Length: 470
Image 1 (cartoon, rainbow, N blue to C red):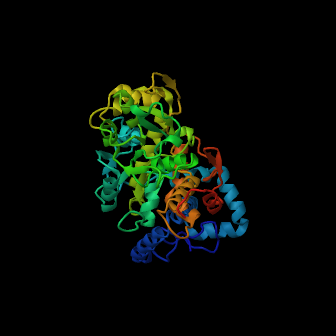
Image 2 (image 1 turned 180 degrees about the horizontal axis):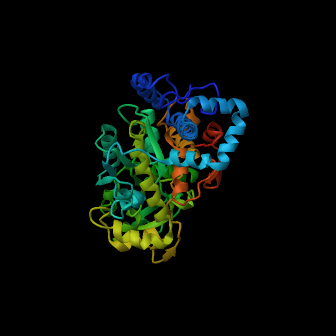
Image 3 (image 1 turned 90 degrees about the vertical axis):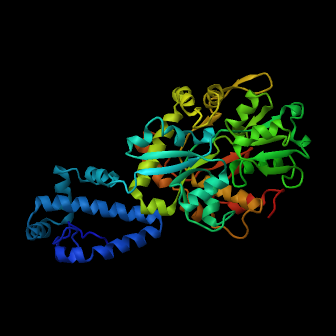
């Protein structure tokens, strides 16, 4: 039953503030029960909560209008019985913009439940929107006092976020899925990914000693680094190797190395190469220890990389703060998407408390005009881009790769997990407010190394790979 009675129903009474109780005293006595019911509803899932919230706020607007027009409830009911609810609604809408009022009320938020927040990040260009939102005022614009905390590695980011030390965090796109399923963590915790931070923005970089070994079929015995087991870097590297006939578990070694330590390991000859986020690849070129073999966009153009993430508890317990935080990041993402802003952003986020990199390194990544380490200067404006849409088909593809390499066993409800974690509805609404053009759907098809992926057929896609653990 709706929290609000229908103000256009001649048989309903609007005797209390919410229209549900016979008197205001009854309304007040029911407050605690209503609060508990709302909390239970929140636990049923963000989608159900949003739908209920939309209905409730629309009713609230309608009741306010009808109360103003008919201070005496008996007069309202006589009017409705005389003309009917449809005619009444049309007549009132002709003199008062009900639809616009409903939308405005739905988009408004109450006071922030928490103003001071901690958001963890890894110092890589994938975190650009999360980082730049601090010095460039996007958080402050929403009334938030956010401390962005540089963190050494992904396991630490995960642990601090799960413990509540961080209110939200920069994560690799697969991490919220893994956390929600309890894979690679001590327990399963419902987690969300309401926005992608960047698309593309990775590369395979090899040691200079391998500049004449460009054919992956010659890489047997190589030692590679990726940032984390649950990362696009790991899945894309495995995909790339397998498509060239190498088994990533037997023909090469793949180890997890925090991004800030990768160049040092390449210099020390501990690894032969890595598939890493930027600016790690460009820093290896800058230091003369490596060359860029291929950009990750050549494997899958438009692939997700990193993401803004938060626990489902944070999303439901602090809806106003969550919305303000997400809006800050999506507006920063929209700003970063404009190529005209990239040099400005590079100069801001290269600072020691953020990326701690030479400005020229960050600028080469963000602008897409860069040295490849083999004597060429290349230009690719889409080397990295920023698109916050958390396509649920991205999640389904990630889940197929988690299962392909044995990280997840048994049956997976691909669509449910994707919908629960990748919160496309929230992103679409705020993308529109930020001046971006959101898609009409939450899933799409795409190709990885020329192989089409249909998110509606994940098991068939998984079975099509010759090299796999399942």
